[in-house]
Image (cartoon, rainbow, N blue to C red):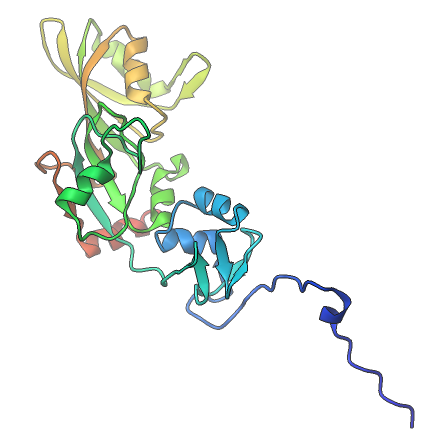
Length: 270
């Protein structure tokens, strides 16, 4: 009887075994990409996590993960900068009334105050939160915060069509007809802005309050569109993001949204 051939061992052909794709039975079924899981866990946005992986900051069981395409069914054994990552907590949202003069950023190297400097004072025990979208330095009003990077991404994508409403105090002359024409979108210096539902609320002399609802939220979109119409914006307030309203929240205050409202809203994003 001829001797049995030894079983082929693929790892013996290479000094470095290929990074395994982990698939275990769990509530996640066939698994998800690591960037998505870490975003859901509130570590950072998907794009930031991809940069972390490129920088060798993410590891599994002590071995650096080399590709954001790695599929996992849990975060067991995953570390970021050497610290273990917990499984994603339930998605939460907070309403924050951002005052003017705060940057929507984690830090500013010129020394300007950020939303995180403020939140560390008013909510020192709050979990790690990320802003949903941004408000520029001089814009105030509703800034939603979340612990779930995937929810953040869903709410920011133009494709989901989540509406944002702003009130702008502007100086100059503009007609309601000009504002209504924005419903068809507008191109300014080669940048296309989608439909905007705009209405002149009231006017006192050459100062007026204009309400604008849009879904894209491009950088400084409201200011640029109104400046294109010959207006000078002196105050800009976001009053609504999706179904969530500023609704009398005091400047600088933060308040958690009811879990039921978050779950109900998230179903509309699918």
